[in-house]
Picture 1 (cartoon, one colour):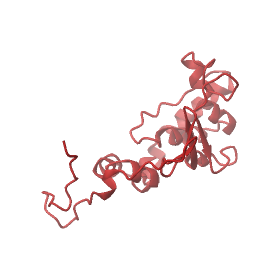
Picture 2 (picture 1 turned 120 degrees about the vertical axis):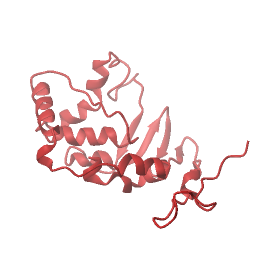
Picture 3 (picture 1 turned 135 degrees about the vertical axis):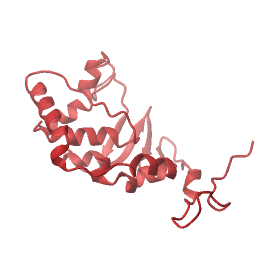
Length: 187
């Protein structure tokens, strides 16, 4: 998905990731013909496992924070798994697999409830799992674009320092000048 979706231009990744690190993680991907990708066979097998009562989980590794799990779920759907089951792969199936389904993995009274609120219905289009509007963590509600707290307090996160860092231009030397060096925190 890194090669296909141009992850470098994802707004949340650009806001919350130091630009040289993001570039190194996303701009090294090479385009490969879709016929060479193995995920369709893997997702087809996963769909067959779930169809017959088995459990499947996501393993996003989070090379790109916030994108790995949505991409895994989107790829899972390419194998013919019903979208409702794809969402269970991303929630309750993982909790069952690690023995924590009594505490998390579904929205029920008495369970921990960290949530994401989407701007679109993933049961209509699975790519809507990338359209996160709000995140709730430990009873605090955050706006996903900025991570400003909305509830129970209204509080802005502040500007990440790397947004003020200017990457070297393609014509500059390998040595960054004072304008392009990241500002070091004072000790």
